[in-house]
Amino acid sequence: MVILKTRIKEFRAKHDLNQQELAEKINVRRETIVHLENGKYNPSLKIAMDISKVFHCTVEDIFEFIEDNTDK
Image (cartoon, rainbow, N blue to C red; front, side, top):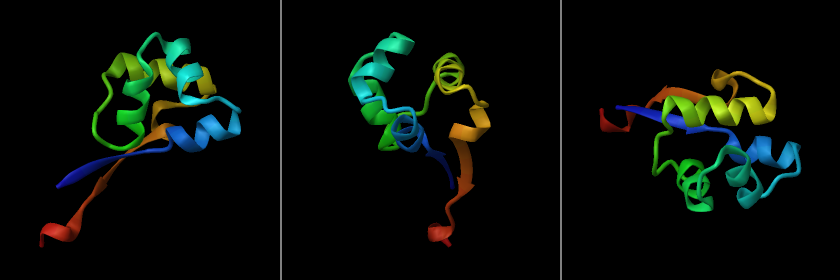
């Protein structure tokens, strides 16, 4: 199984942003940021790109697909 790993929380800390502030910058609800950070929601391409623009980095810097080998 493939899992999407996110570094949003880490990038928020580096840029001194709370969840609400990031949500406002990309025009989503704070709960969306919470779900993204907790791995309960995979972002649309637009949301992923909007987040990367806020942090001045690539989508790949924030999101990474990893192989979960716990099933085997």
